[in-house]
Length: 410
Image 1 (cartoon, rainbow, N blue to C red):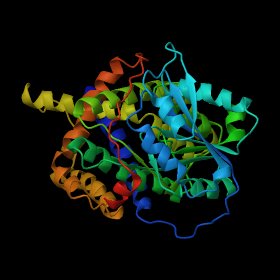
Image 2: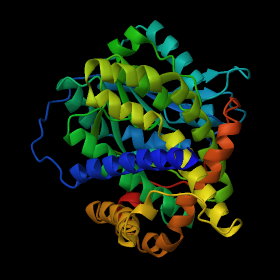
Image 3: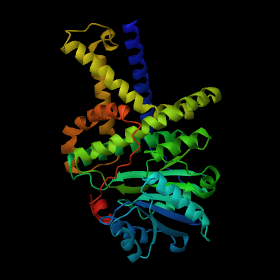
Image 4: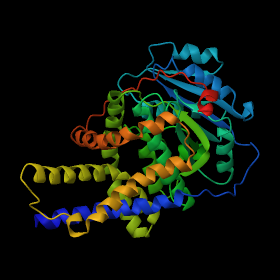
């Protein structure tokens, strides 16, 4: 019975792995035909900020220079429980500083929910809401790209999240590699197939009527994933805009990265519990591959946990108990199958970097440490499972002041 359970679990993991690999192949190409619309949609650009005086000024300069009619967008910075000069810096750039003080309900999800309520009370109403983080930099054509998708019927749009500091450390390089892979072989592949894309926490655009219709309601530690699930459950499928690029600051140290990723995994467990089975049931009832795919994405945190536990079990059995004392999936196949599986994983990341034309020399040098970053997700996810009820939001400090022209040179 124990052997059977182990084999069944490994088969399930292998099927999911093969499915994701096959899906990623559809991101190897980009569709060339694109519909371009004249600027017509108005935008409320929201920026969530908590003590961001070191970086928010660069973003304000960036947003003032977007290639979009100035009368069609306004910037609102949510100064959430700030104790520094974030609000003063925002006002010095002529932008709207919206001060929120609520020490009991902390985090971006609560801040956004509060800001949207303020927005609906204002005399001017906008066609869409765009959300950035304070450490971001947006491509000059970002709003033009959002306008194109909105005019084409999209209601929820995710931009391309790039890294503004990939050469700062091996950790930032690892983030960069992961995001290039996700943008190209997760997001673009689903976009090419007409499937739902997932939101990434920043660079997001929402039709105003949709937000008013269903409300924000995403106040978990991963508000982006939570809102994605709510949309897909209702049959509203977020789309991905490859050309709407923004650049995000990544943590410099492993400790800061681990803290951030722990928060993500804790939130993922919460969302998986809440949405996996309802989405799975709807996908089967409606025979919807799109909803099945999103259910699998939502439960991915459990897949990572299960992979870690099975790997640890096999390792302990062989090193401590002189195993193998039970059958494994790969023991029933030739050895070359294992090497093919490993090679496929290596290939997929290198392919993503090649397709994205990555030219950062330090990033290629840091590739040797990238497996450590990937493996570190296992203990982080394991710890997150036992601390998933910890709803305390933790702030990721941003200090890297970079201008858009510097990023684009790299």
